[in-house]
Length: 346
Ligand SMILES: *[C@@H]1O[C@H](CO)[C@@H](O)[C@H](O)[C@H]1NC(C)=O
Ligand SMILES: *[C@@H]1O[C@H](CO)[C@@H](O)[C@H](O)[C@H]1NC(C)=O
Image (cartoon, rainbow, N blue to C red; front, side, top):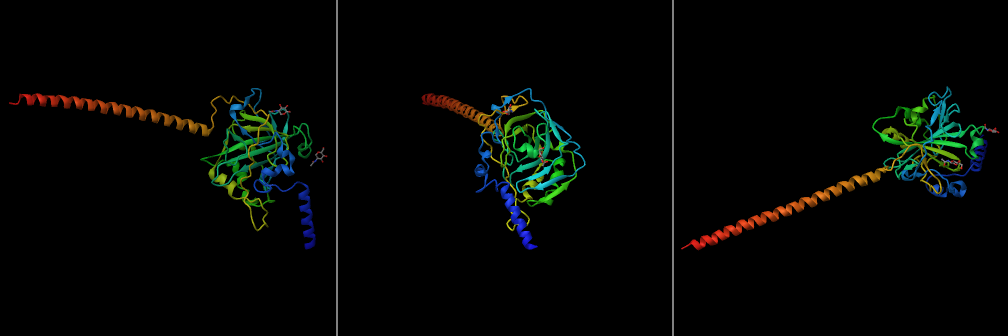
């Protein structure tokens, strides 16, 4: 029995090795080395990217994204899995997207996040700014391909919605449908069922404003067949919701005596190279990043303060000079009076 188990384990390890080698975000198997085992990761059209709004091209023909079947995704439970790299929730093909060049059916959604006390966690950045987390909803081209496994290897086969997540004051109840179950899948390989819920509520309100570009999967094998839609509007969750994502999961199996926290599972921005990022909305010439705004505000304040101080000191100087001159006059006149008084002395 034990022997059979050991053999079985060895067999599944061999299978796992065949299906692709081990990868992580940091260390000897980290993102800098992905292309050794997965050549596409070194390609010219990789994701994520830093979206520079100054260089984005407005395409007024890009229509709003229309998610179909998102609000009531059937009666079948979703499966939430800790796969050692992220938490991933399976989605039924009854959920699909309109508003893209073809119809894309939903496959799964998953998250990328950082670690407690650190900024960053999202994969996409906007003008060099990273966000605390990012949600990816993965779809395959169901018009051209029978299923995701057939689509995976081919061109034009995937469409991913990228939702940037930031921290606000109040909890986002839609996200608790997922976050409430994380305690049941702390370790890699663990799964839990979730009753179907309104997935549309995970999306930002404004589905008409987004960035669009051709890119890749952000994890090995980094296949360059993803049509990306990154929404301009961010979604907000509370700080404690973010902490549940950052604090409760491990990338190792339950049996492992050295548990490794599942944190910082985001890839660094990749070179844009020859690609163009389109926007469905006019981004406007005054699209400054938070850093630039801070710089401008402080620069202006500092400028105003220096001008104020300069004027203040100049005025003060002129005044003192005048007072001194007046005193001089008073002194001179009084001394001249004194002198003249003297002269009146007998
Ligand atoms: C996917 O579709 C192909 C082609 O129709 C088929 O051969 C394959 O069995 C399907 N795979 C799954 C997992 O359904
Ligand atoms: C993506 O690539 C395809 C094929 O090269 C091209 O037709 C399409 O315009 C590109 N889309 C974007 C958003 O760059």
